[in-house]
Amino acid sequence: MRRVLAVVVVLAVAFAALIAVLYMHDRRLGPFATGTNVKAFLGTTFEMSRQEVERTLGKRLLSCPDVKSLEGGSLPIPTFIWQCEAESVDLDLAAHEWSGFVPDLYVYETQAFGSFQFFDRRLTGVGVHFKPFGVNDGERLIRTVIEAVERSYGPCSREESDSVPGAYTLNCKKPKVNVALWINPSDERSPIVDLRLNYPALHIAFEEARAARDASAL
Image (cartoon, rainbow, N blue to C red; front, side, top):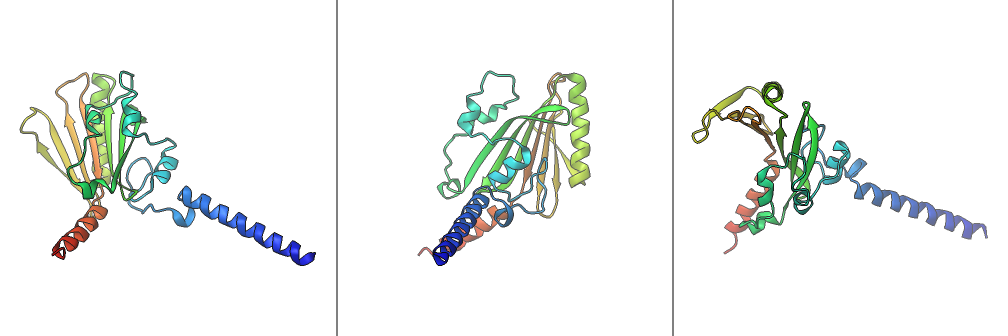
């Protein structure tokens, strides 16, 4: 009887351990976390899984159809979102990519729409579309975001727009991250402020592997 009881206890412990491992794997906790120490946005780091990003933000990442269902509301949904379901001409690449969206961010005292791009289920890019509340808020926001970008990623170079008078892009680069801040202040009531952070390491590795595959195809 004691042996049977001992076996039952061992099996129960093993089952509990298996459940714990599966739980940690499903939520990318502990040894299953994939985030690096390369910071992205609002506490997230590049190569985080979707679960880690959602846990860090305290918000669920929405799919493109989810966001489209919010059309007509008060959230700062940028116009580019309506093309987010366009089919990619690069089928190799499309099989590895997924984007999630957070339409109700509030950062730098301003509403913002966040997009998070994943490659092989790891974070590789972040886009932030800010929606200032008015003239004074727009001017303040532009100063605040420029200061934050230059503090974290400077020095940056300014590139004037050839097609939009007064608009410009601040391009910044660190060893592992490329940053572009697009500013169009032409509409004082609602200037356009878009921030893009790109972590190219995973795409570079993919392109190298694809080039090697193609080189030996025949």
